[in-house]
Amino acid sequence: NLKGLELSFLLLLPADVNSKEMHSGNQTSVSHFILVGLHHPPQLGVPLFLAFLVIYALTVSGNGLIILTVLVDPRLHRPMYWFLCHLSFLDMTISSAIVPKMLAGFVLDSRVISFGGCVIQLFSFHFLGCTECFLYTLMAYDRFLAICKPLHYATIMTRNVCNYLALGTWLGGTLHSLFQTSFIFRLPFCGPNRVDYFFCDIPAMLRLACADTTINELVTFVDIGFLALTCFMLILTSYGYIVAAILRIQSVDGRRNAFSTCVAHLTVVIVYYVPCTFIYLRPGSQEPLDGVVAVFYTVITPLLNPIIYTLRNKEMKAALWRLGGRKDAQPH
View 1 (spheres, rainbow, N blue to C red):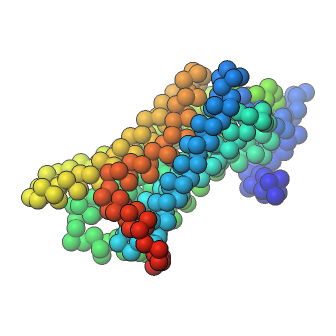
View 2 (tube, rainbow, N blue to C red):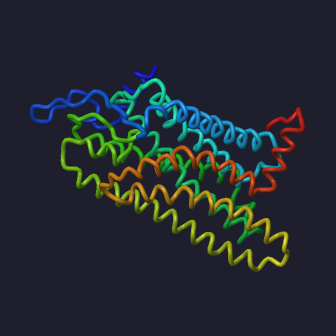
View 3 (cartoon, rainbow, N blue to C red):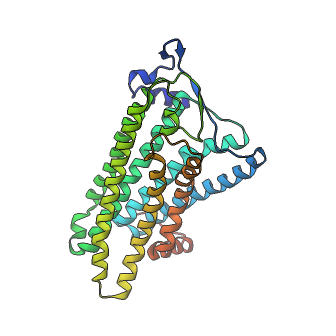
């Protein structure tokens, strides 16, 4: 029950977030928001619906296929592919948190989202996005150990260690998103209620608050900026050591395979970080281009990840062929 889910989630947030009847002076807070969505001519509604529907279907099926392939192929039961399963699941859920509501707005003109639904959407997006940020860092560390410390890799990255590290990324994402969500929705929202965006996100919601948002903008900039910069610097440091180690590999095939795997990961990291930096590290931005960039990292990036990893990874391509050719694959 969606209403029950909204109520349960709101109970986790500070008391002033839970009330839909907050008062600011003589004004009553809004009980729902209207998502304006992407600005487009009316005649493009159906074509855009079909385009985003196809992208969403490919995103879910592509990432789902990666998860299935890793589960049923014993050759892929290694830390790198275990983390890749987490990444694919995150991509599916991030897209699912945003795209269905966007699709409804294109053809059904269903742009209304309840206050609780908006809270849940913002929390879900930042929870999943932050978890993915931590996961990219963890995947870089995994490649660092595999290439720079191959003799110790198996003893360091045991199954229990992998599980704990993966759990840590999810816990970190949860704490980060709880902080950001509660800090945003402690503000009064007394109207207008038109969100000039296609989903409930921090910059768009701050523009609707009936209070001074300077502190919120500063905290968002520092918090997300520090998080993104720290993770990105750790990734670059890992790959600095990795490149140095790869250049010392005598075998041409060995260097090619190592570079292929690392290039896939670095491509995904760049595709993820550049749009996020554009959106969140420019406080107060209201440029129309923000919506286009947001579509890229909420809709396009989750589609690109499985394509990049399968095209650049020989083991994954071979596993997909085996999956298509055998009928008795069983997970181990």
